[in-house]
Image (spheres, helix red, strand yellow):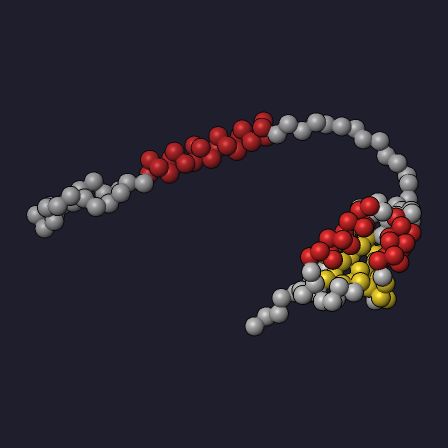
Length: 140
């Protein structure tokens, strides 16, 4: 801490040092207050949960790969299908016990109208799991 100097004749200007001790004291007091008050702010409800001895379901939901090329042709697991066959396959997939996840891959030149029609057909049949598959961006 510097309040002045013994050589006041050499440097008669104002003192340029900042005394940070009061600021550090205040910050330490605030830190202690926050540490002590943090456990009081958590509103956890203590529950005694029951224990069950059930095996986890081993059945995994299948996935269906729907691809749409730039011309609008639809492929079901790499097999070309038309609109009627797509409706039938979506209806069959909706009846499966764990519904399969539809993974939709569309060419970047595909019209949005075709993608929207496929999504609407899946929704009308009752399928709820739909994911979009994209290719990762290539590094330059």
